[in-house]
Image (tube, rainbow, N blue to C red; front, side, top):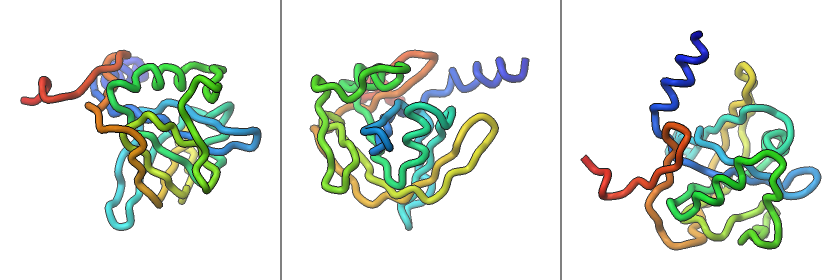
Length: 162
């Protein structure tokens, strides 16, 4: 019962959408996350949660560096692709390239943060990852933010200002 109420509470709480990528043991890996938050400005540190330590999440959790792509509204199909289990995420149809440091960069997102993992902490069935931002990249034009609310992607823009 508590779990259902907990899920309902957070379903009603909008969150920004990101795709987190890393160079995994068997190639590029990535997943969609709505748990990315800023923790500190000096040093620049962020945190995100992974629902498990298997599959793509396990590859990202084990990486020393990651790229956190902050998605814009036009990136909703990208968010859906990286949210699907066993999807062919890095096919030739996807606009991406390797950074000189080896991590996969999605080239059609407004902002990306290359970060070095500082810690991994098991919390219940999840893994909480903190990472220090090493570089801020702007691969594509600015866009309205993509948010996730009540199991649906939404565009956040001037029309939604109070």
